[in-house]
Length: 383
Image (tube, rainbow, N blue to C red):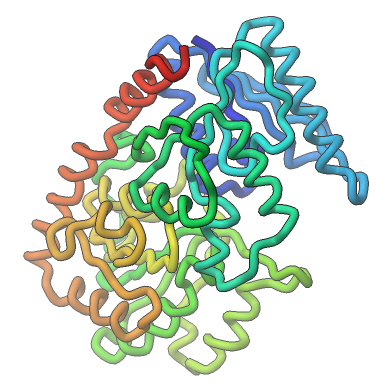
C-alpha cells in the first residue's frame, strides 16, 4: 500500500511547523515501519524544490510560486503534477489531507481521497469570533465534496464541523492523533524548577495565552517564585503586526515587575519539546478551541501535571482531577486556581501524573493508533 499525505508543514530543521506537521511526521514514520510506503507532498518553506528521504518517508517540497493572485493556481498545479508523477512510478492507493487540502486536487482514477479533520476554517472561525472568509470557505466546501471519506480525531471535531459543513453521506472513522510514548516519556531533568509554568503552542488568541498571562498575578500572590515560560511561534495579524508584541504592550506592561518573570522563548524544534515539558512544574494549555490537541497528551505521557481546556474535546482528553485538570480558558482566575492547586497538592499531583501516562498509553499509544489507521485504510471503504 502507498499513502500520500498533502501538507506544507512536514517538519524541516530551522523552520516552525504546526500540529499537523507533527502528526504527519509521527504517523508516516510509524506506517513505514509497518511496511506501508509513504510519500508527503507540499509547498516548500524556501524558494526551491527539494526531495528528502526522512526515516523512510519520501518528502517532496515543491518550489513555491509567488504570482500575486494566482499563486494558489500554480502551486496547486505543481502538486497535481507531482502526484501524477509519483503515482506513475509507484501507484498510490490513498491521498490524505486536512480540511482545505483537496480543493484544487485533480482526482486520479483508482486513488481514494481522505480528509482528516484537524480543525478547518469553519471550525475555528467561531472560536476566533470572525466571519467566514469567502475564499477559504469556498475551498473547504469544495474539498469536502471531493473527499471519499473522513477521519475525525475526536467526536467533538466531527460534531462541531457538521454544524457548518456536510460530510455528504461519506463514511467517517474516529481515530485519535497518536502520541509517541517512547519519545514522550518521563525524563529526569538536570535542574529542578519548583513553580515553573510552561505553555507550548502557537502564541495566538485562540490558544488562550492572553488569559494565561492574566492569571499570572493570582499565582504570584501565592507563589512569588513562579515563572511563566511561553514556547511557540508568533502569530501575525492581517496588517503584519505581532501578537507577542501586542501582548507585551497591552498585558505584560500592566504587570510591572511581575512581567519580568514571563518569558517568550520562541519556537522550539520538535526534538527539544520533551526537554521543555520535562522542566515544567505544570503544563498549561487553556485553548479556546481544539480538535484534539497534541500538546496535552504529549505532556501527560511524560507524567507532567497538565491543565487543559474544559471545552471542546477537553473532557475526552482529561478526566478532571484524575488524569489532569480542566479549566475555563476564558477565566484567568479559574486558570490560576488550577495552577495553585497543582503547586499546593504534591502527593495528589504525583498520583494524577502516573494516571495520566497510563491513560495516554491506552488511548493514544502510537502502535495502537497506527494499527487503527491501517485497518481504516484497508477496509471496504477504500478498496
